[in-house]
Length: 298
Image (cartoon, helix red, strand yellow):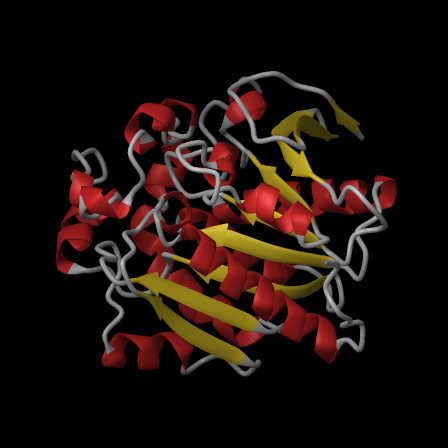
């Protein structure tokens, strides 16, 4: 079930919704094609200390994934993960990765029952949201998802990030989250007040356990995966040795991309449109594998 909710400014054609599941309200943003049924549903999961608004950046018209995806014929649903947005009232400490996987997967099944999702659901996730998406993809039944695109999430922390992971109460440097400021449109940091959010404690406590968790779940993935690292990614190592280690356990079609001129928060920068178009092109490849690809609407 979805009901309206209210918050920050949104792009034209984007509306606020809340998915209700097991007493947990998951707020979010939804954009749908103006004409015809959607080709697929893109489900977006934000990173730690962010919100669903990350995927509907307001600093420049080219930044919003929701607006772009709807124009190209997809439904795009960006959710505030458990512990963020409306659910912060019922789950103020957030949820573990396993709990988020269960909550979000069930909520998406409810969304699919009430909405036209075209050929199926495609997960697109950033940073900590990538951890959740990878967990969901390993947990959900085969066929429930058609593909997975993750940015800003590896399995080997960079040196500065590793120091933060070892002391979770420490202050996160601006460089880790953003990189060089010139990579973002003017007004990004004024507009970011509607994007950033407090990091739930249960997320913080699981921060350092990800490399081990990833090693267990990667072999369980059963759908195509695309991984993107920004040129100025500072949280994760993405040198050749790190990428080899990241992908060695993947037994599914996968690709790794590096995005020039981008910092960790890819979807808010000047390179956002490039990344979003590449991610949607990957979705088209997934649709072709399912035999459901066709020409995009003009």
